[in-house]
Image (cartoon, rainbow, N blue to C red):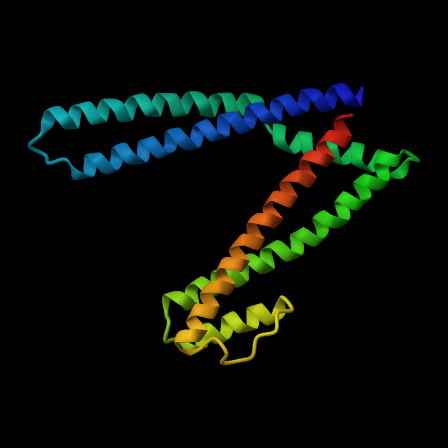
Length: 197
């Protein structure tokens, strides 16, 4: 029974994701039309009327999407809850998939710590690079790098060579963040695959 419930919840969660993506796209278009209206001169009534008509049309589409989202309800939360129950059931059983799920859980917990720390360091590094003479900003970047276990001496990223080194470190952090995000996506896909059988 739980397998069928999971499949149904998965379909509903995917539908919710599609609708949410559509809602964001329509909201973006509404924002674009509003900005266009702000730029149009009052004297150009024909263009104003056309843009206002587009705005009303997008508003109707958005209301329709919002209605569908309300009908789908908390599909994502229900799906995650069912996945969690199935995860617990398999982990507590003698099923070999339970051991793999435990390992995925352990890796996800590590990612939940490492990825935000690297993103913080990357953000701090980008901020320091935007203010090349700000030694305090660069010192904060060094502290963030040291918190990640990287060996960087205070003051090592000052000066022209230091800026080049800092830029390289930020690029490596960005690359590592992308790798970790890809790993997280693969782990989530594998977890879902195991749980859906």
